[in-house]
Length: 156
Image (cartoon, rainbow, N blue to C red):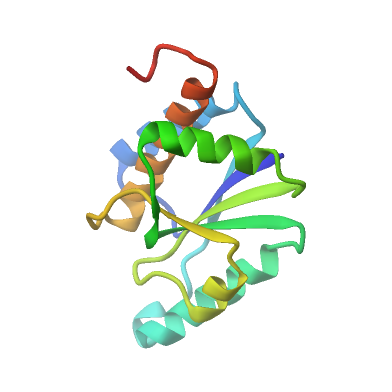
């Protein structure tokens, strides 16, 4: 199964880009992996929060296929330890879907339409992080999960 991380808006900070590139490269040794960055919504400053979330939803939902397994990275999702995440991921990767899509929302989260389409939600923490930092944190945890599944020494 192909694994993808989707997010809206380019990553602004060089230190985050560098970290993301490191884990992106490492992940490709374990599974077919791709990051997909959708452009920011145009004229976002002139939109209400709900309008912005709806426009982001339209962009995302147009790219999803019926046979995609959509996982939202959401503060109200299921929280895991790193080992639990690895076990959960192993089960997800055995599903009959063609792609597993991990989605990080924009600065204001997801619209109801995206929640409706999602298959599940996971949380990285009860704390709040910027949506750009979550990209790096998630990539590191995905990599950590793969090393746990392979019984490699990265996680100790």
